[in-house]
Image 1 (spheres, rainbow, N blue to C red):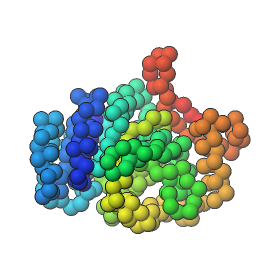
Image 2 (cartoon, rainbow, N blue to C red):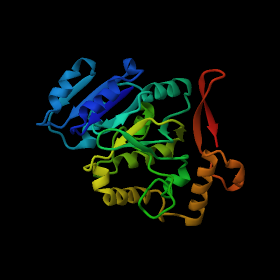
Image 3 (tube, rainbow, N blue to C red):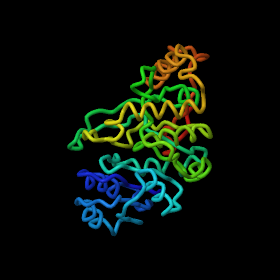
Length: 285
């Protein structure tokens, strides 16, 4: 697995420790890309240098250029990145590695329960993403703050994928966008293959007041809409259908799928661990 860090802040030590102390870290190429910070970032990075596959501190062309460059420093098959104010749940890497090891058909995963933390890093809530499917994604189901029925954001710190999928969709971000390059990447991913939901928290998004996606929430949302307009001319294609599907997904994920007309229920895929054989299995809901 290659994990890339970018965007340094006062929370860097928490972020790096959350990665380095992971079970499964022995299989991780940890790459740190610093944009030439003049604060205390470099001493913190140097303090962990013996655990890093690569690190650098120099000016760059922005966050997504740097992350892209960081990915090129390793040929590890599983990929993900973490901004320095965020953290991983202690089991995240081993969970992702086990899923990709055991299920060759799974190309990308995201958590059903992306977590949020307050400034001091204490987790204050877990959001709920019941499932992801292509129709719902392209019709705005994963854009919050748009007034549409929503199943929540596919959160970057809770999402991992295979390098083969990254290369299949071009091996690069869309640099015509300034904020929603992660969302645009998900759009290309889901055009190629299903996104699988993992029913445990994986990442922790820290609300610290200056988060790019929070400060520029409306601009980020508008870029997401712009991305979706490449795939469908009207968002949503059918508002009533979108609302029904979101409601059905929530009922299904909460164990009330028997209350939903199966003909009208959206299909999505998840992975679940079985204690019987101690392996992950694909489940279609």
